[in-house]
Image (tube, rainbow, N blue to C red; front, side):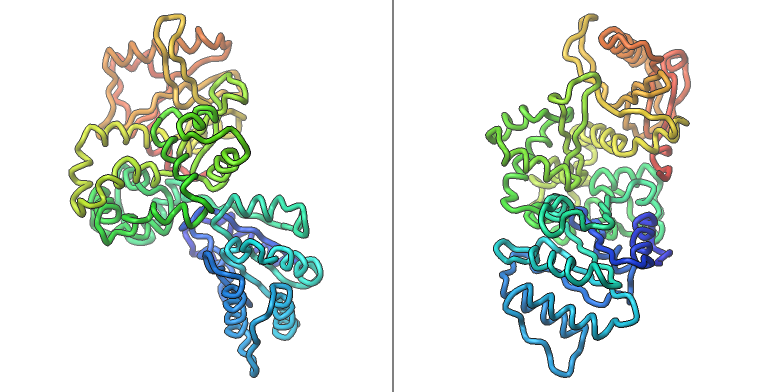
Length: 479
């Protein structure tokens, strides 16, 4: 098993167990575009892969079958090359012939990358693949790895399949972007040594996508790197948004419309509010679009504290999509140097606060570890109130409702310097805690918890107001 790879140790272990298994294995690997799925599989199996093919996006059945044949001839190198089959069932029969001839006494790994692209409509690919697995592969010493960026398609058509692949997946890997701990390791492995404040700025713009992070250059600040990668016409992410969603979804314009609606609010939207903003009708189509965005990791669903399931809220959590819609889209023609100017504006300050909150929500396990409650069951949620019994409303973007009769009520602040609580802020913090207690009638101990970028400066206003103080370092803990 590959050990030098940065991060992904759990995923590598899953793939290694599949290879060491005495039984046939059907492994499904899914995750969003550019997250590193192909790299992971190749790193884990290296020269063990006996056959590999990547589907052709929007390819016809004839094109896919010819491509399959070309790949089979590449791997088999027969004296007499295979001719293109007339259908997928015949194609898999050719693959069986090759595997039985070349892998009699050793384990074979078959890697079908961009699986959804191979399974074009009316191609009968899934039916033929199901027959291949059930009639031959499941009874032989093979690992079949199927991989796809269209995560929702993979879940619906493979993991939850009711036909020939029903309950056939033996192991699954949903590959997520790097967290901050892994991002720091990854960039250090490439010689990039930035402090954590700089790393968080990079993460806020592009998230933990390895393919994006590879573009970060040594010796440049976060601002310089973001400027080059996102705003330069030659930058990798300058046109990425225009390709991202169409590569994952059919009729991607509907998904983009929903993403735009969610990008317009920092509190998230209920399903009813999404329908109102987008103009979609209340039916299966809109539900499918929303589910696909959630399954693909662009949108997160969460409950507001004390609310019923019907008030489930959805929040756009893909860092790059948020950054693109906020800054890049309307500035694409302005070129290099744009971000160095934008990073000084009030809109940047407003956005950075929200983006930092979003990152914190993704790193709740690290926060729990810092609080010393990693082993205690807790539920993360938000709390919004337009008007309270005390005359004003409050917004709490993160609270942890713990099973040890306590609640952490978070105030998240993104500052460029150590944070010192003012008298006005202290009054606001105490009022927020009082309103929360009065409105929820909770009998639990409420700890007002401050999560800043740099450490809290203890003063007369923080004493007796802030129960727990954390800073960005806690977000870089492994979990």
